[in-house]
Image (tube, rainbow, N blue to C red; front, side, top):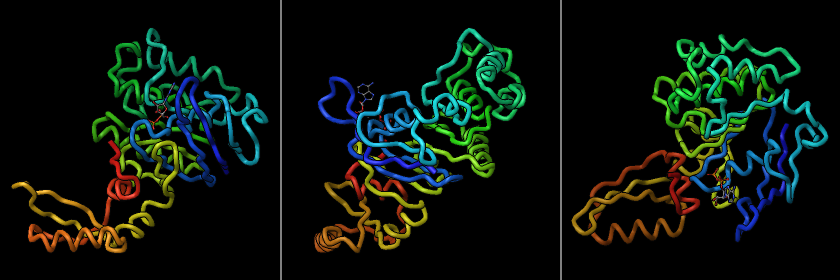
Amino acid sequence: MIEVSNLIFTYPRAHQPAVRGISFRIEKGQIFGFLGPSGAGKSTVQNLMIGLLPMQKGSILYDGKTLSDMGKSFFNRVGVSFEHPNLYEKLTGVENLRYYGGLFDKPVIPPEQLLDMVGLGDAKNKRAGAYSKGMKQRLVFARAIMNRPDILFLDEPTSGLDPGTAQRIKEIILSERDRGATIFLTTHNMYAADELCDQVAFIDEGRLVAQDSPRNLKLKYGKKAIKVEYTSNGQIKSEILFVDRDEDRYRLSQLIDSGTVETLHSQEATLEQIFIKLTGRGLS
Ligand code: ADP
């Protein structure tokens, strides 16, 4: 179990904190999603959790232990895939994995097998520097799972991949969870969060604004949502309004009274619509 409490972090010379008091718990074997727009503070939290940034305030405990309690053993237990791939560009795909695999004090999945899993079998002898962005991302992902980690950190694991490849990566993420790994996934993609995560936390401006399973979030906010299409200055506009919110009911009656309403549809809200409702901003 991972327990993060009252995390606060300010970058040197920044005027305000990037992370402003975030707390959450991740149960073992869960996929926990951090969903929020660019700049919300997701990567900062991930980097604090893996020790790439120094702790300032708050605590992060893995089964009751801090990173310094665990020392080097943490490296054997963890897998990390960054959004911006950090690879040895002059080494081939298979050499990158062989080199990295040699750093562990435990057996790892053979590089060739990993490359086949992520669809890079044919490119294994090509230099990583000649890989496309999506190929580099898959290589970093393969590297993250090679030590069969207990805890897997994935930063935007499917962004920029074609749909077929993204699907393959999603299936591997689910099978990692089924193997027992606890997964921390950061994304601004509501579809990835919805499909993959057992729990989703909405992150905005360094704060956690809501947390629940995607299903519960949608049940809680979605059942009573109405999509209103209306005309404004000759253009069709649409809004999602929640009938259990005073200001939304007022807005709905305003629109109806204005005589501009074209259509009304009750609907299940998407995670992005709920996010907008709670924070006033979209995910991208
Ligand atoms: P996200 O991962 O959600 O896109 P980040 O954690 O990268 O968000 O960024 C959170 C905030 O911290 C942003 O305002 C960003 O500009 C700022 N930030 C990120 N990295 C640095 C850095 N190395 N130095 C200063 N500010 C940073």
